[in-house]
Image 1: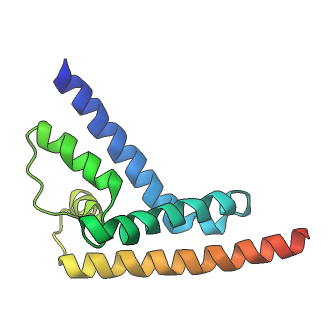
Image 2: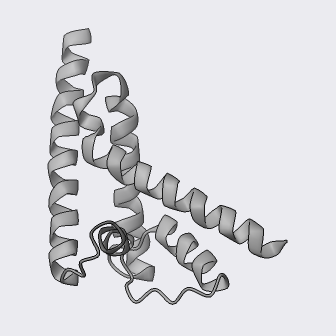
Amino acid sequence: MATVLYQAADLFLFFFHTTLILFNSTGWMFRRVRRYHLITLFLTAFSWFFLGIWYGWGYCMCTDWHWTIRRKLGYRDETNSYIDLLVMKITGIEFDDTLIDNVTVGVFVVSIVFSVLLNIRDYSRKS
């Protein structure tokens, strides 16, 4: 029974975490959700940079929870990066960790810049 729950949690976290990453990457494009997008970006930054002080730069709570569940299911993931695992699963190609990290940070920075600027613009138009 416990294995079934772990398998369900594994699937849920694949869906949730991937959806969160996609939202963090593209949410700034949609005016109706920009406020929520900014919140998820700040929560991501909090995890990466503040919690990262204790757990290591780029620490992600979702990845930590997911890796714990995957270990209980017997998986031995060879990467610490969820995005690295996701890219490998989707493409079958194992990219350099540094490349994955740099692209991840680049997309995050672009997303946060667009989100902040567009949220400011939306707020000023509303006022």
